[in-house]
Image (cartoon, rainbow, N blue to C red; front, side, top):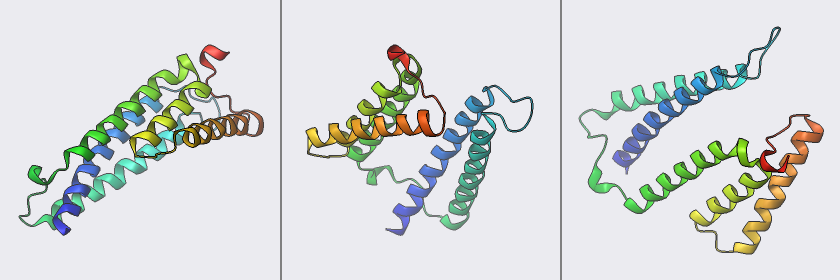
Length: 155
């Protein structure tokens, strides 16, 4: 069990390093403010902190391994691996389709697909939850925070 946890920590650390670097580079392309903090500064800060913490985790795992193989591919459950890869593909598609299609269309579809992927059995209830949550978040951001999410083909 302990060896499995170390292997999981190792893999997750590598994935978080890659993800945080990718998101940092994307956030650095956002427009900068003439005064104060720009729209990309906060995501860049969060990504830098995430990168640092993932690096600390990776170093910790490597130091504590002491001859234990970090990845035992015989112990990998392919069902969970496939599910994780599908979730990564869904997230990438959600990210790429957000601007052209819009928040109010992509978010409920993304949430519903995620529910189904992880085994939620009540399809109608899952669809309603995804739709209500998406509309509530959209209203909260547009009316309260005055942050306008992508409208895509609706706007």
